[in-house]
Length: 112
Length: 480
Image (cartoon, rainbow over all chains, first blue to last red):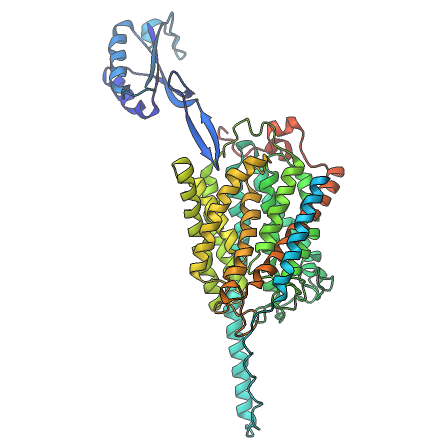
């Protein structure tokens, strides 16, 4: 089991979600987050006062998948989240030791 | 101390310079000869006389209903400027933790000033005929009823005139809260506003609008100052007091290093649009009748606001490469402020010019002037109302025309464009008195409030926000 954490542009979220559903991903957790990588923020001006906004709004999407689905999911995210511009985000992969469904205490991949 | 001396000298010199200008009376055309007393009229049968009397009464009643309808609507429009107009405009400009506190200050004034107005306020502004302040003759609204007060508005019930003027007394102190925003105690605000209304607003309103007032233009003033709807009475007094408050209170914690962007320009935008609409009641209503002058003031108001929004945006575009929504609405408000004293005296072209100039001037005041001197006028009450009111009052002296409003009598020149440049001097005296009264009055009141209720919240309270610490609530409980 692997966890995919993808931090993406909010404007790409809908197409990423669709791409994942298409390859058979059944569930996901989505959070609105703010942050920046190499892309620094922008400046805003209110009545002549300039503010640098360096934490930009992003969407963080988390899915835990059985190993055989991971590569296809990563490809789907790459394809659907890419705009080619700086600020497109990142994907992090990590191994997950256990998954437990709270309703019936199922464990392992069948709990996903 | 030395600086104070220099300032005093400058003020004195300006006043002295102004006097010769004032001395020149307008080159008045001879007033039209009064028609000779009518020759002896033939006997009118009593029945016809009776019918004529009835007809006269009906004509008067018809005019009164028309004027009264417009004036009641205007009064409601001016109240709408404070709540929700100004409350939304200011509310959006503060940080999220202070949104309720600033709105509550406007709302509290709607209640507080109304009660004060009934007790003594109306009488102090419009009672008697003294040069500097009214009297207590109409305290508790004694004698204020359905009969018109011929000195001020001969065709509407005095109750209408009274409640209309009340709405001005409400918004004026509310404007000051823009300078004290995000750091003044609620108790201190209530005490400050009560004293400010009695010590600064009432005398200024009487001097400019009251019968026999020192600056009154049509009811026997010494220096006839043209102030149609409150450029000096409302905007200069509140704007200058706002500056004094900002200096006395000091900067907000973290200003100017910490970012303090407006928490919702959407609220501010809505508020500014309500202000614009409400201003028709403020300015066109100041004709105190539903007549051609009201239409003229309505048009001037609208044109002034539009030109100022463009003026501010153009200045911003040159400076930052973009025109912002906040800039556009700030410009419109600046234009409305500047056109306020002029609305009933100038034509549409002058209104466009006054608005455009005010938009650029206030942009400079808010972005450059404030940065140079480093005072924390949180929501730019001085930069917009003090500056816009001052420039508007002076431009009124230049642009006022007898064809729009022959306030000094038929055929007499009114402002500079009529050839009566001395009026600019009169305007200067009016502005200087407003500045002086606001400066001195506000400093004294701030001292009094400082030693009684206190002015500023503690640093911890300021960081936590005024909503929680002053009122025990939050503006947005989005998760509940």
